Length: 310
Image 1 (cartoon, rainbow, N blue to C red):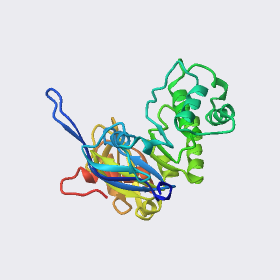
Image 2 (image 1 turned 180 degrees about the vertical axis):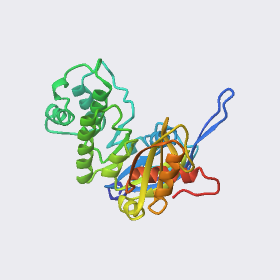
Image 3 (image 1 turned 135 degrees about the vertical axis):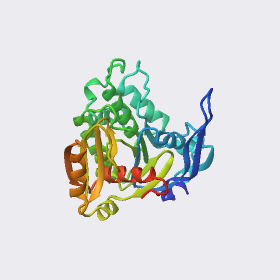
Image 4 (image 1 turned 90 degrees about the vertical axis):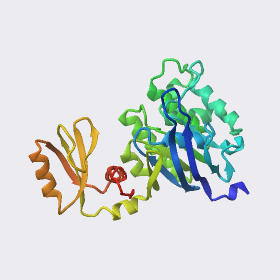
């Protein structure tokens, strides 16, 4: 029986190649991705822009077909429409009918997923209130800010009482207060037994609520880790950031003029001296028991000839 399947998501050897266009070669966006996510697990999917995160999510929700490989949701192929019943999905940039109201959007979701509640209006207002939208429940979406549209889409996804949430950059467009509120709601959903698969650039929030995270880069899944493994692997290591005109050896550019690298305690004085000798301005040095350090270390290792990801 489907409700006895312990795996919420299974992805097996998925490859996705986008055909080339005029003067542009074909692009392999996913290169043999395989992973398994258990029911009740929260999985954070991280990686740089263009790494393949959104492509895999689109395959899971049935918006794209893989070139090769397969994927299932609770034992059903993602090619089957029934696999998406009870699936709450929010893209990075939700496209909502702007002539409707948040209340109408949520009611439509209930009916599409055949969710029966005693009082639809009260149920929808509850979720709109959770996302601080009750005051505009009957206002047209036309004119809403990006953050308000994002919160409307999140309220819609949770109002259907999903057994699985798939969120592509769910914190995009939210201010710090809104981001904290959403993270708290997602953490509550996780603690109540829901399954969550989400991509995010906000590494601190991934680290806070994910049971495991996967790092994808250039279409390849480089590592899958848990926060416990993360902490155990990083004793006596530090992350150093500096500002300068160019990246020194083993440093990764975070944004123009700002560079970072991870180093062991024994090498730290020499690395600091190297930064000063190059004319760089040291910004900070901190213990690297963090997802951020694994992110940069793994990507840097993957780009070194002859090396493998962590």
